[in-house]
Image (cartoon, rainbow, N blue to C red; front, top):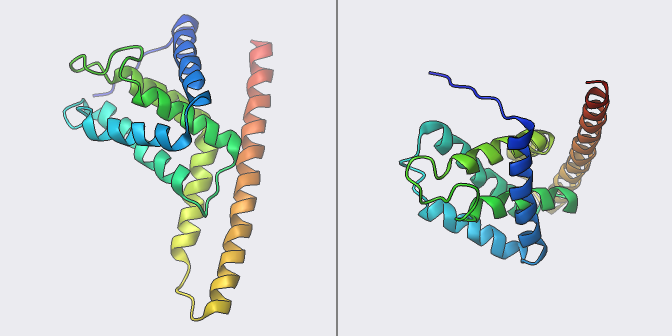
Length: 182
């Protein structure tokens, strides 16, 4: 069964306010502490007993952590900050709906995650492509081959970073244009 609902501007505003609180927490916390808190939340929250939609959406947090910790991907600071803000929200047990409220306590986390995943979809697409390229590389026969593969992969990474930024800017311009004409 598929259930849809529409968020009104006031609903979106509440999510943005909660996200602003998370952003303030990020500003005064270390990245490793935010990631550790998100890992702790993944380990301790009742995700396994949550409804399927919530469970599926919250498990994407694992991918976000992997992306942040992937040194070869070297996610630029602007995008890192967006991911950290999302993880800070996710790991806050007292967010819009406290996480310990049975059945719906993780619903706001799933909704926020869904909204932000849409905002960073170009980052997710680029990272998935990068991982695919990296995983498809054959084993290097010698040091020279390894160096050449690393250079080639770094070039792909840089092009993917540039592409994800171009697409985000294009979306922002399109959104601003469509919002102005609405």
